[in-house]
Amino acid sequence: MRFFVTVLLGYMLSAAAWADTLTAGGKRYSGMFAGYAKGRVQFQEWTATEPLQMELRRVERLKIAKPSPVKYTLSGAPKKTLTAPFLGIKNGAFLFADGADELRYFSRQIGRIEVKIDYQAFMAEAQQAAGEGEGGDDQDGPLRARDMVVDNQVTVIHFHHDGSAASTRQGNLAQRLCEDSRGTAAYVRVLVKDGDDPVAKANKLRSLPQFWFYDRRGELSGKLAERFTEEDISKAFEEAHKGR
Image (cartoon, rainbow, N blue to C red; front, side, top):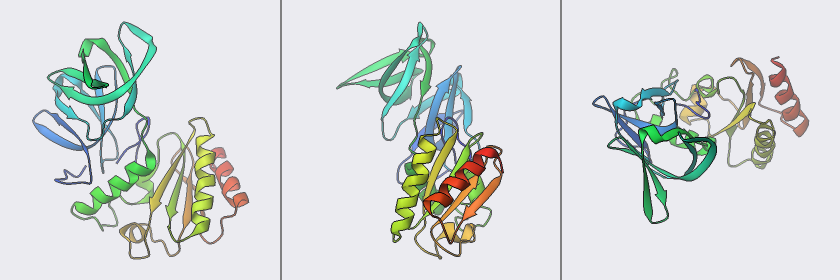
């Protein structure tokens, strides 16, 4: 999986739990809005390996399913960052919420839009979307760990099992290490119910939980399956940073 500033996973799905929708060039895409810069809308389909880079002039409509605050700048004041819930794009205008009112900007007025994506929420929705699409159990499908790796960042993939206190505790440690890395590492938690879960089958998981570590080149540097103490987690994280 690839991420823009953030994330990444396109089956054209008729129904996911929720999805942003992009209509462009007569086609409709489902997934998640990932940002805007230099006249291009970044949009991540649920199961695509790379985000779409759609020229704004081709965008007919962008509808945000769950509007949330984003950071954005105006062309006339590129160093001043504003924050407001983003509603989408309609009739060539960018729409933001302003209390009960609506802010509307023409394309030439917007400099960039930055989106902070909740990795865990995205993964949960992406998994559900993949399960609803054809071939959800395919071993070459989007549920494999290598498809969840974030470009140019150390990636910690945590196959989490709710029934394990250690999974929750050590998962919190792994997440904290990534959050403290100043943008050099990403933590991806994937909920796996049991050995019959499509994720478990796709990644040949014989035990739960597990922690997989990838370096910045996207290469697997280590796995923790049977043992994962705090020392083990920290050491594997450091080795991933070193590219070993």
